[in-house]
Image (cartoon, rainbow, N blue to C red; front, top):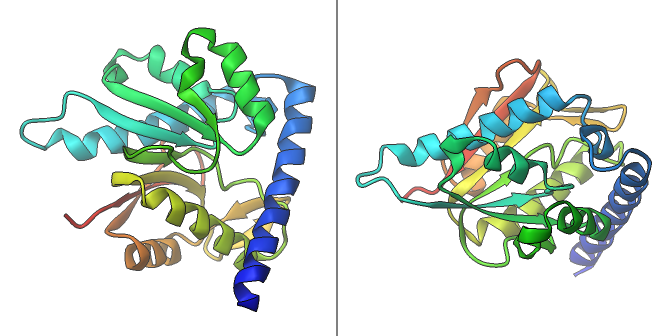
Length: 224
């Protein structure tokens, strides 16, 4: 009982800290990669491509291949992934849903995409069942020096999304030989994350993200 209460309080504190940091950053930098703490647009686009390619590649072998694939962009920021999808015809078959815990980010999405404002919702898990939940940089920035606390928060978020992810989840993480938090940036241990995610959810594999040093794209799929 006490451990459950402590975990809830801890996660609430983390989310309040993140919300404040992202709201301030968005106010300072606007709807730009820097407005969500990306260091460059190039890295942002490469990570989008990596996530979407592993998701679409996973279902490409299915016979018949699905005509559409639904995804939930968890931690969607100002909606940059939707812009990426809209400008890359190979992803035209994706049905998109964007979620963020930060109301300021959702307001920015609805302003940036006035004709698709209904695709964005304030929250941290899909509002309905989707094929895949995807997380682009969602767990990179952390306001804690406690790795165990941050990883507990991360896996709690993944747990809630897993329930409404029919085929699986995909996320990218910076990785290091030993898990660490440096300058508010979380680095996972790749093999340890694979072991934990495989035991908790289903088969998990890691693919080095092209052109982004130390970054890996993880694909977690259901056994069936």
